[in-house]
Image 1 (tube, one colour):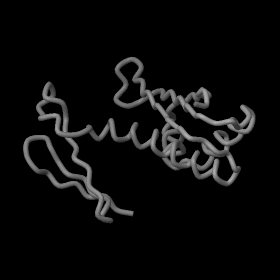
Image 2 (tube, rainbow, N blue to C red):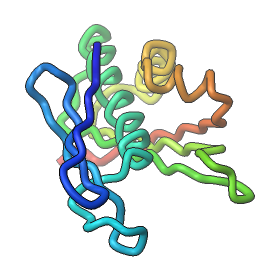
Image 3 (cartoon, rainbow, N blue to C red):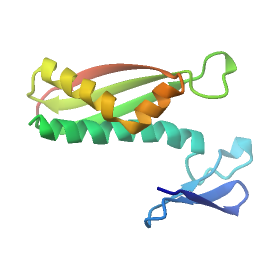
Amino acid sequence: MKATTCWTKGMSLNATNNRGHEVVMDVPEGKGGTDLGATAFELCLMSYSGCVNTIFNMVATKMRIEFDALEVDATGLQKEDAPTFTDVEIELRINTEASDSKIEKCLENTLKLCPVGVLFHQAGVNTTYTIKKLQMA
């Protein structure tokens, strides 16, 4: 796995995973950028949310949990002007008929397998999780 970033102009750059996928990164106008994309720091949090969503989906498939909506919010907090996240709150919202205990077990297994979450944990970031079951339409 390899990531490459190429400066384009100002504070803006393109990041690629060298498999043909590219993301524009920048900083807000107030910090000298032109706000053309998410910051690298924001992408870290977006990656955590995406990883939990992806791995939960994979685990749910194996556990035969069917759903028609799955959303994951990751909220990063920095206490006392820390240079990085000190805490992350994950809220998983799912529309399913599966039991609460089955969803909780799926999330438990997800957290063991989510590589981005493991990385945050190893970095000492305190992470809390909540599950909200949406109403079936």
